[in-house]
Image 1 (tube, rainbow, N blue to C red):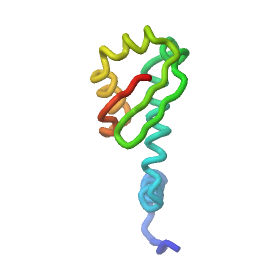
Image 2: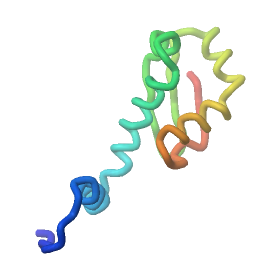
Image 3: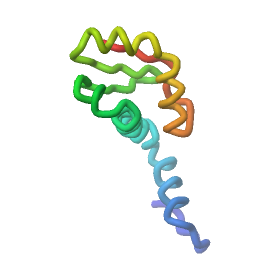
Length: 98
């Protein structure tokens, strides 16, 4: 059991400490990446998005439209930069559109 501190912590600090102690960052990153994709890409792209998976530093996005996949492939670096900026840290190094 963790040692109890008598210092007063904010809830944000306590949650950060809990996430780090229990090594939950990778799982939260996967959820946050999927949410960031949905937010940044909008309804047009989300209607054709079947799956968003983060494995290590690579984001795999499965799309049902080959035309959209080709269009998005031209701006991979920009998409990676936008997602990393939204997440506040550099999680994604590579984007694979399927």
